[in-house]
Amino acid sequence: MGLSTNCWKYLVLTFNVLFAMSAVVLFGASGYLLYRLFLYRHFIGVNVEYPAILLLMMAIITCSIAWIGWRTAKSMHQIHVIITGILIILVVVIEFSCFVWAMVVWDNVEIDIKSTIMHYFEQSLANTDATAVDTIRWDRLQVKFECCGVTGPSDYTSKGQVPFSCCGQGPLDSMHKPYAADCAMLYQRGCGKPLHDYAREQLLMVAMTALVASIMQVS
Image 1 (cartoon, rainbow, N blue to C red):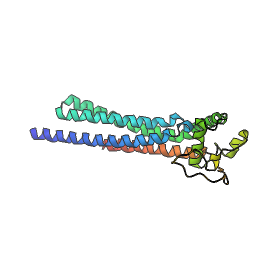
Image 2 (image 1 turned 60 degrees about the vertical axis):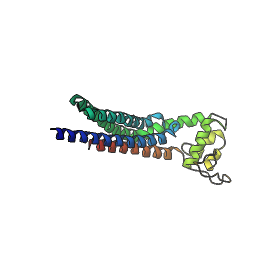
Image 3 (image 1 turned 90 degrees about the horizontal axis):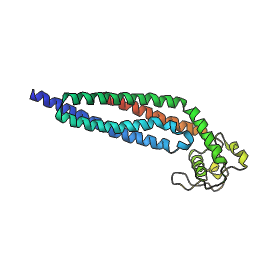
Image 4 (image 1 turned 180 degrees about the vertical axis):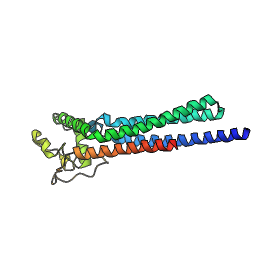
């Protein structure tokens, strides 16, 4: 009986170590994906970030449950083991729900981005200060994605001039390529499409991360 109890105890301890390791990996992955979405939150809207936020929260909760499970394994009280097991099942269910949620957002993200980016563009267009925060954000976006306006350079018709960021010149930032010497080549595509593709890619990664995490933790 003593040998059987010890085997069970070491098995539970091993499971908790693996569970904690999966939580650490999940925390890093979800945090990175949330950061990549957070960078362009003004253009894509905060609704797009929610699945990644939930996944990050689940990673933190998973770490806490792994710690509880570790403490439980030492005492091996049946009620504590049952409670820990129920908590783990809830975590797996929520992580799978996060996968479903991310896929739903992924499927509808184009509608959210269109309304958000257009509203933000009109708001920025009304600002005449070239050093305003909103203007600098647009400059960085246009340099990063090599785009101009929401649908193209024609979006700046009402302003009478196209910003230099539409031909590769923008705020100094080590993330961006060096400035062009002049505005010889104007970006013809709008920022709406590449930003939409970027957001869909990040959401797909969030969904796959949640799915893999739930499958691994079930296993």
